[in-house]
Image (cartoon, rainbow, N blue to C red):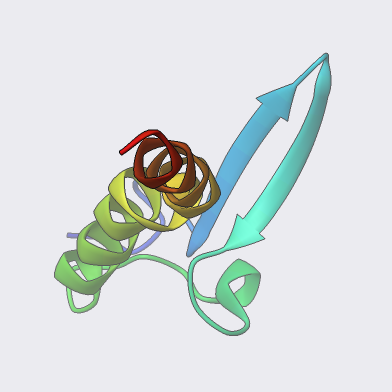
Length: 70
């Protein structure tokens, strides 16, 4: 696969209230192009960010509330 086909870098884009913010999935992520050699690593980091990293604060808050109730 040609490295420029997807045009992706190791960055997760977040849009909130009309403004965009970029989060590096790894150090210097905005400068690392996704290619066939690192695509699996990119997908793993992307999934980890979506389902773990991005919700850590919310889960911690809910856990705190839950344990206060019981």
